[in-house]
Image (cartoon, rainbow, N blue to C red; front, top):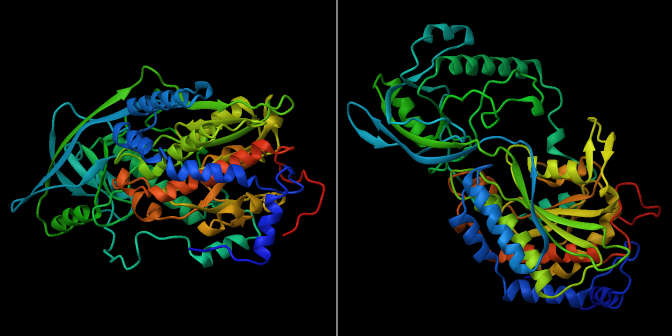
Amino acid sequence: MYKFKTGFLALTLFFFTNSVSAQSIYEPSVDHEVVEQIKEQGLYNSQIMNMAGWLTDVYGPRLSNSPQLNRAHEWTQEQFRDMGLTNVHLHSYGPFGKGWELKRFALHANTPYTYFPVTAFPKAWSPGYEEPVKGDVIYLSIQHVNELDQYRGELSDKFVMLEYPYEAEQSWDPIATRTSNERLLSLANAKEDFSPEEEAGVPSPAALARARDVYTLMTFLQEERPLAILDQSYRGWYGQIAVSGAQLPNEPGTPWGERINPYMPDTPDAVPQISLAREHYGRIFRLLEKDIPVTLELELQVEFQEDNLYGYNSIAEIPGTDPELQEEIVMLGAHIDSWHAATGAADNAAGSVVMMEVMRILTEIGIEPRRTIRIALWGNEEQGLHGSREYVSDHFAVQAGNDGEDLDKQDDYENLSAYYNIDNGTGQVRGIYLQGNEQLRQIFRAWLSPFDEWDANTVSFANTGGTDHLSFHRVGLPGFQFIQDPIEYFTMTHHSNQDFYERLVEDDLKRTAIIVATFVYHTAMLDERLPRIGELDFPVTQ
């Protein structure tokens, strides 16, 4: 563990300690007294694993608009009230779509030689059957979609395989990792604001042709209605199954906002779709190659919820105390919904309980923030950031055009100082992405300085994609995601049947909550709100 040394660093610490009163973006400072209170509360009185147990073991999984997600929202509201937070409420939006709950599932395989249970999970929003169904497995062996007609009228009593199995590979790399010094240095030296959401560009003719073939194939299967479509987990070996939602055919090039999905009202039922462990998918495929028939028996009972199609975000506040600044807002948040194959621990009970712990710490030490501090636990993130996008549209700005500049601004647009997000698993915060806002480098460096011993000191010009901070960034507001250690996020837990409470790292979550709490506190206490890109009128030191 890194220890403080004498010399320049000690002088720097002395400067920060003796400049607490200069709460300004122009003279970045750290309130070390409050930071120490936050650390003590977060390290020695943490409630984070207790909350994580409730949110995973009791209220997991939390699929969008499912009864479990609704129960989780009710539980968070109770916790917020117990903390003494104000303005506790559910923000509704939508309609989003139908809920779905898996009631019972089993898949059994029989051959002339043996029986074996199949490790698998149905994709969310797959319809079920009132009774178990049985049928042979068939692999659609075609070179082109023009050959599909040979199967017309032949699939209604079959389980259909479409893919060739992945080639087996050994896992020579560690499953769990920390962010390397080389990676942190690369992030610190980044010069471009890179967003994965913007990298795709114009699809190639070959990609469009493949998309057209997939659309033709899925349309054919939707018409033929086999018992189920079988695929293999899109990531992982050793019994890991990464699974999301069932798909309906969508014309290639259909804009994201115009695509039809099986959770939407007034859409047809998708064909049941089931993701198998790669090892079991491969075994069934190889048996068929040997002309050995495989019969599957499927028990799939589900329940759709259509009484209330609206989505919800769980909201609460610590009210501001400065008469001149209390209308301004510092937000922190994480998405609370999850996928259904496990209990949604790393994705994203971890982020949710971290943010709840931040609010608990700040209220427990009795801070009186100048600005209002508002927490939001977002719903329906996994289907496209629905909860945060709708909240931003209702409270801050509606993006009227595609260039991010044509905005219909709401009353609180000018009042938001910053939004901070956690959504990359259980790993400890190692720094923060600037989201291209270079003007904040100095102040973020200052706020990270108390955590040098935790190696949490990287400030990157770059951006990371796929999280709720983008809902704020896309309308010109300061929205930030922290740099986190991956641990097992992208190798094991993300959207998989391995994402349980046991995958959470307590010390990492504690440290993350402490770091986020200091960012939220210091932002709430500044003389000025954090600037948006291009607002400051003085040169910033790199």
